[in-house]
Each structure stands twice: as structure tokens, then as C-alpha cells.
Image 1 (cartoon, rainbow, N blue to C red):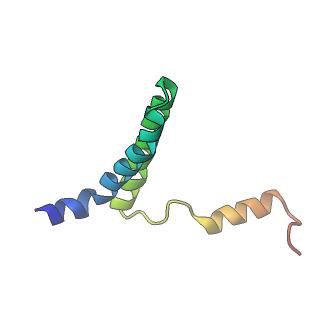
Image 2 (tube, one colour):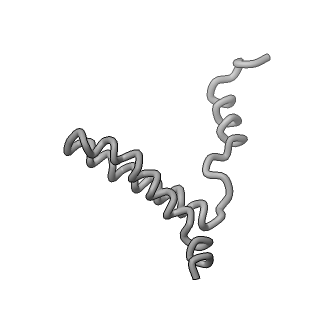
Length: 77
């Protein structure tokens, strides 16, 4: 049962745990940092869900470099 659960929700769980761990440092400081912690948890959940659904890479580096080279031509000759 745990193996099936881990295969289905493992990425989301790790994402939320990583966000909570990073955000825990900020919780000690104050209210606005607590809101930042919530943002970290949401980002961790989104990245984990993306991994669980096996949608491919989060950042498509080929398209990004192509877009950047179109925006700023003349970088490399």
C-alpha cells in the first residue's frame, strides 16, 4: 500500500516537505516571512505534482536558450 501511495504522491510529498523545511527557517523571523513560507510550500507542491504526473522537464532549456538568443542576437559568433 505504501509503495503505491509513494509512487502516486511521492513528488508532492517531497516537494511540500522541502518547502516546509526551507520555510521553517523563515517562520522564526515573523509574519511576512511566514507568508513567504506558504509560497515555498505551494511551489514545492506544484513541482512535486509536475513530477508525479510525469509531464517532462519543468524548464525546457532548448526553447529558453532559443528564445534568449532571438531576443539578444550577436552574443556568440
